[in-house]
Structure formats: structure tokens, C-alpha cells
Image (tube, rainbow, N blue to C red; front, side, top):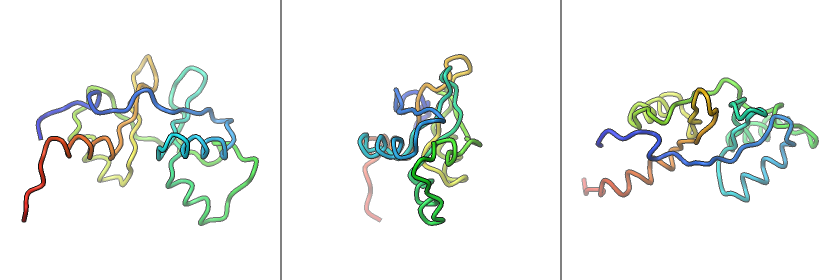
Length: 134
């Protein structure tokens, strides 16, 4: 795979919610937009966390659901991020090593500028490499 940068493959703009958004509203947004995560941003557009479909699975499995809960209750705040100038191979390695499917793309001054997902990487690879028989 040639060297390619995150900015070329990332999805932008991204779906965001605020920490005080009710969880069911975030879930509805994810269903409506057919996405696996929403980024949680503060009023300045800076990343505060991420809420993923996997988080919802954990919430359901642990029966922690509260009807009036906000995103802040369930979001992950220790988020690994990347920049648009990062090499996609390095980001893919990090995603595999850490076992996640969504990585926010941030800029020091602009805040959240996009998201790179395993779906983005897979879509790129499907156009670049033709599967060969084993």
C-alpha cells in the first residue's frame, strides 16, 4: 500500500453531540446517519469524548441504562486521536493494536476535523487491491 495520509480517507464533517445530549438522542442520530459512533465536543469544537455502538453494547450488557442519562455518563474520555497528516498505515496499526474501529482526527486549533474508521480504510483498500486467490 502506498503512503497515504489520513486526511485523504477520513470522513468529514463528522456527527457530533455535546456532553449534555441525552443518550437516546445520540443513539437515534447514529441509527439515522447509519454510523457507529458520534464524537462528543465542547462548545469550542474541542474533543471531549466518543460514544460508540460498542459502548451501547456494554451499557445493555451491564444493564446500566438510565432513560434520562446524558452522553457524558457513558462516553469514553480517554480517546486516542490522530491528525490529517498522519500516515494511514500507522493509524491502522494503532487501531488494530488497541482494538477499536473509530479514531477522531483533530487539529490543534480547529478541534475535531474528521474521523477515520475501519470502514474508511476498507473502502480504500477495496479499490486499490484486488483480492487474489490463495
